[in-house]
Amino acid sequence: MDVTATPRHSRAASFAIVVGAYAVALAAAVAAAVVVDADHPLVTVLVADLVATLVIFGSSRLFDNSSMYDVYWSVIPPVIALYLLAVAEPGTDGLRQALVILLVFAWAIRLTANWARGWPGLQHEDWRYELARDNGKPYWLQSFFGFHLFPTIQVYLGCLPLYAALTVGTDGFGPLDVLATVVTAGAVVLELVADEQLRRFNRTRKPGQICDVGLWSRSRHPNYLGELSFWWGLWLFGLAADPGWWWTVVGALGMTAMFLFASIPMMDRRSAERRPGWDAYAARTPMLLPRLRRAGA
Image 1: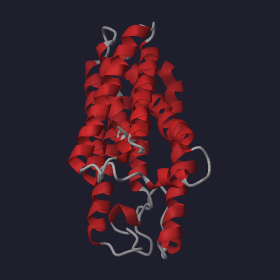
Image 2: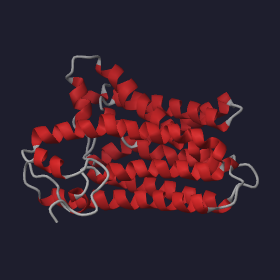
Image 3: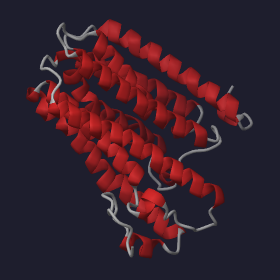
């Protein structure tokens, strides 16, 4: 039976399908990790991560909806963090471990909850995926490489500092850890406030109206600023644990490049097409780093 030919799934049924798909993905990832039995935990994580991504991609094909992958971004880092904690070397700083786990879970729970609150179900697909369906190129190749594999690699690279922070960091908790805590916790709060302000605005907004309140009056993408700050905070934790792992900055740099050169320009172009006052708003409001004072104040 072709599930894509069935009537629209209810929201509850859609959530059940997604939860089931991710449960299968997790089981497949664990099985892959056991079979591979790699010499280094990061190799094990990569193999398991790729296997889980393949399962979710299969689910996306089965239900003809690439948004099956959307929540993967926020649910996989806590799984990676818990695995790395389990294989930690003796003597790793316990305070740092506790803070990193707490902050990763706080970020993941908030971001997943934000997705769940706004997700209407499997009848909905992200507008970026819909654009790809209409560009004349093989859609499922775009879906696999662009919407599944690429973000999986991005998140994996972003999580590399967790290895140092959770498994090999024998240096005591110090000033750089304090900075990492402030940056990472501040990132979670920033995303929370920005998303809640946007949600309240959307409840009463008129067609074409631009969110120009609160944080959104000082930055066009305060939620993205929070997201990037989270990944930079993880890198700071890894650096504090073991400076030899400085090269894991590739994760935070990759995230920054993706948002600056792909995600944000795409969002801005869409807003300019749909909102008549966007150009004026963009002229007075920075793209990412906020003004301390509102323009004209």
